Amino acid sequence: MSQSRDCSSGSCSGGETGKNAKSAVEEALERIKRKIVVLSGKGGVGKSTVAVNLAVSLSSLAGYRVGLLDIDIHGPSVPKMLGLEGTIMQPSDRGKLMPAEFGGLKVMSIGFLLPGEAEAVIWRGPAKAGAIKQFIGEVEWGDLDYLIVDCPPGTGDEPLTVIQTLEKIDGAVIVTTPQDVALTDVRKSISFCGQLNLPVLGVIENMSGLVCPHCGETVNVFKSGGGQSMAQEMRVPFLGRVPMDPRIVAAGDDGTPYSYHQSHTEAGKSFCDIVSAIVEKTATGDERREIRR
Ligand SMILES: Nc1ncnc2c1ncn2[C@@H]1O[C@H](COP(=O)(O)OP(=O)(O)OP(=O)(O)O)[C@@H](O)[C@H]1O
Ligand SMILES: [Mg+2]
Ligand SMILES: [Zn+2]
Image (cartoon, rainbow, N blue to C red):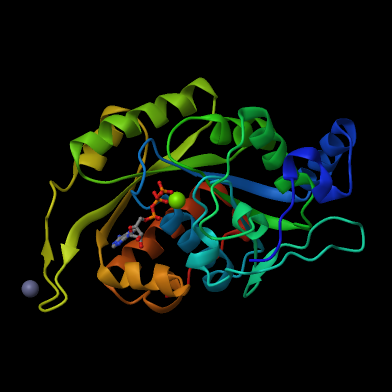
């Protein structure tokens, strides 16, 4: 990657002031119908995988106009998962940034603005908050049916800023794995949503059992079903389980999202059902579209 910008100072937008940046955010938000954030208290549970596959399913399989915003400032993984590494963002004629594209999906990640893959970002809270606001207001999102936001793990500055900036969010998708330790952290994410009055669309139990590549049987490596009982206990909906499938890792590494090619596999099918459930919860009447398998 050959580009470096200081997003925190406003140079992304050619030097907008705080006041203008706010109206840019408002202007952008007026054109976005639905907003979904993907959260988890725990790292490495599959948030980015879920966010990317949800965005690609809504866009490629259901034909919605979709934006995917990666606000994981310390470990952006969306560019790699979509094969968009090395993208140099182009300015629009209004002096904003054109998002990267995957098919029709519009993508913005801090990864596009970092000088190198291995570069560490050291930003304090206010700089992070400024950057996240610019990712919304200073990117040409246009008219969107859905904006999907991939958050870093935990309940820190980034999810807090994005939730406060986006204002009326349709809901959070919370990703967990079956292990108990992960579940404790995920309870924190659910109460975080409660404190911020953010509806929980539901919990996904990811890496729930392993599909054996030899015989196709599902083996429960960790205890399966913990996500569902936790969701019941916390009184939030359960969206479904996605088994561990080595092809998901390969798809993530190759930049070819899983849902794009593998919708006939067990993991792909559970994913389609989860996306349909999310559409069911967020779309209204005639807008509701089928997810094509
Ligand atoms: N169902 C699955 N089966 C197999 N591998 C998976 C599955 N879900 C995710 N993975 C793999 O697990 C790893 C972590 O996934 P991912 O990056 O989506 O997690 P994350 O929660 O976003 O992590 P971080 O907290 O670092 O942002 C990736 O290599 C991904 O390909
Ligand atoms: Mg991630
Ligand atoms: Zn087997």
